[in-house]
Length: 201
Image 1 (cartoon, rainbow, N blue to C red):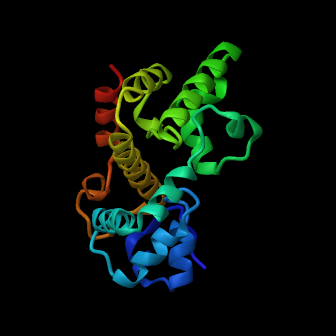
Image 2: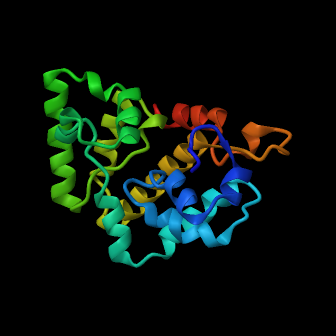
């Protein structure tokens, strides 16, 4: 049995299928089928290649399966988060954006926006909150509520891919022969912070 924390890509490549899937089961929200679908494609030469393969599996999935993946994501700062029933990964991400410290008024605002978004698009509002602050999340609600359903389905998937890339970087270290480890990750800390700065205004 291997654990995800601090493992190198070589260990994942050499692991049996069950251990491989278990290690990456939560990269995509409650969807171990994504990891299972790429297990036979090993060995991966880089984390970027593994990340791209997992994203491609989601892209190639039937529309109903992609929609099911989208619907597994919790509302931001929502009732499930307050009740402690969201995944550890989602909790960490939301807490990092300050969504665990909302005032009653802020909580009510997030609820109204989430409800309005669901009413219009019939999916949860998905955002890679590690790229955002609380204020920029609220601005994103305002911008995206003006979009079409088709555009929001695509945006939701794009945000899921960003979330997955960061979660993969958290779990797996680049190959030991990588000369510049940050550059070998699917989304490095520097890249994430730069994208956060672009998303915040």
